[in-house]
Amino acid sequence: MKISAWEPWLERLWQGDKRAAAKLISQVEDNQGRVEIMCRILPRTGQRMVLGITGPPGAGKSSLVGALTQLYREQHDKVGIVAVDPSSPYSGGAILGDRIRMQSHGTDPGVFIRSMGTRGHLGGVARFTTDVLKILEAAGYERLLLETVGVGQSELEIMECADTVLLVLNPGTGDGIQAIKAGIMEIADIFVVNKADLPGAERLKNDIEMVLDLNGKKAWRAPVVMTSTLEQRGLNELRDHIARHQTFLTESGKCRQRRHNAFTQEVWRHWEAIARQAFAAAWQDLPRSEGDDLEPGNPYTLAEEIWASIVSGRFTDRSAP
Image (cartoon, rainbow, N blue to C red; front, side, top):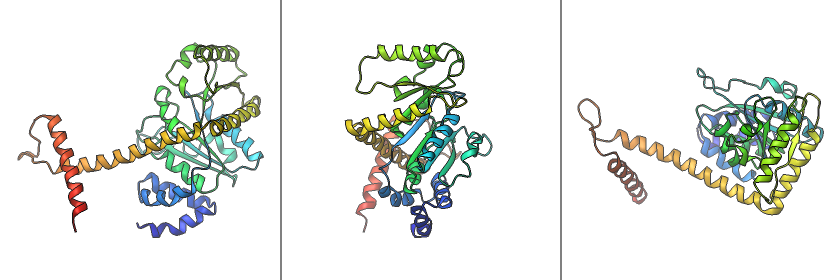
């Protein structure tokens, strides 16, 4: 479908229409007109910061997202939430669907909630997460929240999607040191000890502080905030730390650096997708035996030959009249 067919939907998106946002997100997720749609949306993005919420399963990420959403709505900010969930092995969709833990915000006209299935993509986020966040920004949502799937050591990709990353942990899951050694310590801008009403919360906080002390002085020392959505404890303090970190990013120039790195990775991922398509086409064109099998050979030279054929074909096409 040509981009002109999407103009009415884009015009509705500029007006903050929820249905238009959902429609365009679905098209992007299905990779239908994705490049054309995103090229129109990009000029209207880049002004809002993304808050990423990550951590192991059961830490209370969804409940925390709901509590922060409530605080932002009290400030009359529109909130866009992207929640990445495990994919159904049957449908490929997000298992938790409409986020059963956020039902209180489901009918709020100032809140947009989108669940995305990982569809086999690693890194704690879905393949088109960044695109979806940009669509929501273009629709006028001032607060963009991204909740990852909660897969532990594979969550590093959130650093490419979010400006401020909250690492949510909770007591009662064993040795606190082991929890914060899990490979995601370095991604946190703010540590959140959630479910602070449970025994062991203070000890977990002390463990995290000890590890931070061992890491030496940095321009930004990640604060450790104790929260309890059950008791409505520590939520205002957390919101204030988020605001301080985003101010730090702007004033220190770190925001520009992070976004440059994220842009580099985004270009790489799109280039990789193009390269995979070209490889698939070149692979099908390779000479085969009568049994429709490739003759065994040297995979290294074959790879170089395929690459050379792709590059030469590209330049031939450019020079064609």
